[in-house]
Amino acid sequence: MTPVAVMVGANRIVPAAGIIHPLGNADLSPDDEKALRRRIVEQALQALKTEVAKPTVFAHE
Amino acid sequence: MAGLRVVCFVNQFFGQLGGEEKAGVAPQLMDGAVGAARAVQQALGDAGTVVATIICGDNYAAEQPERATADMLALATSQRPDLVIAGPAFLAGRYGVACGALCAAVQSSLKIPAVTGMHQENPGVDLYRRQVYVVQTGSEASRMLDEVRKLVSLGLKLARGASIGAPAVEGYFARGVTRNVIATTSAAERATAMLLAKLAGRPFTSEVPLPDFQTVPAPRLLKTLEGATIALVTDGGLVPRGNPDAIEALNATRYGAYSIEGKTRLDAAQYDNPHRGYDTSYVKQDPHRLVPVDVARELEHSGAIGKLHEIVYSTVGVATTLAHSARMGREIAEKLRAAGVDAVILTST
Image 1: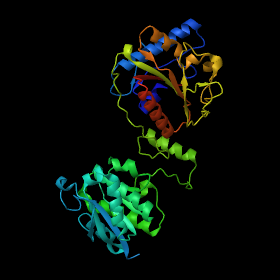
Image 2: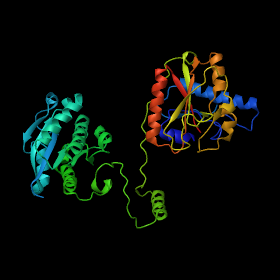
Image 3: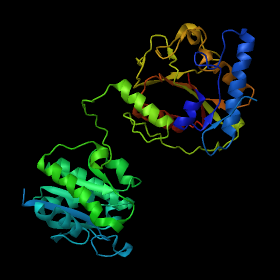
Image 4: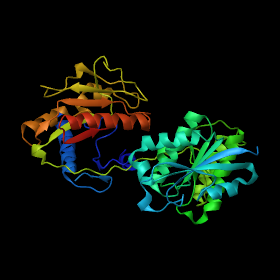
């Protein structure tokens, strides 16, 4: 959905884990799922710290 | 229809009072067609007479818009017009807004048609095109008579009660009105023709206007993350069990504000999700898959962020209109700002 977010003008966009569970993944173990969630939230925090001039997708590192 | 009484409105420049040094002049009424209004008289020919011209300074109109519009409306009313023509204002912003305001006031108070014209980037277009007919003009006055003819032609049709064609045909900015028409070909044929034109690089006109998304400059985080209050917001539909705010399953007009005070995690048994736009079973199983209270709380405790805001805002983002989305976003942002929140993580499905 990130192209839609860019099109509507969201400024800081972090790709998440999917439409039905953006911050999780039921196929993972609970610990791995939480680690995944933590990575996405930490990436969102990094994005918040970063100055942007236009809609920017912060790709997975 | 001879004897149509027309009142024109022009600013101080087009009324030939002067330039910026005269921009503060109050609304005044001049007999007959003055300045640019003479082009209106020329375009009218025998169809009507410009009985008076109202002139108002751009600054006067911009600095006290309500008073200026009320004064000009009173001046227009005194002339018992059948039609009011304002401008054209081209790319002049203060002038364009004044034209739109006067036309809207004339229509609602006098119940007579009013027409204005301006360039598409004039701020008056977006402010008034839904209320009044705003004819599309160029940016400069070099072809004044040609531009004025478009305003007058539409104004005469309105004054005569003639049917008005589509915006592209008549040359006015779309007012957001949908009118049923009978097409000669099916939707499938028209869509295919558009697609073929697009693939061939030929021009085509969509029958569905695309929403015009406003560009919002990206604000800078003014604090370090360690000192910042972060809020969680979602359009993925998480609500407390029972959906206390009755947030709609689609095309939502409402949002909820839900406290997470004292919670280190969300108990799935206490939450529900009315969102009808995706399979919500995984989020119902574990709400953190949508609203990451668990890790956000850990980041707060470890000091990575200053504070996690104790209220989560939630709505359902599916088939939600742009107007409602913008309103809800504005209201939520105002509340967050008032609560001292520095940044938001909005999770979306």
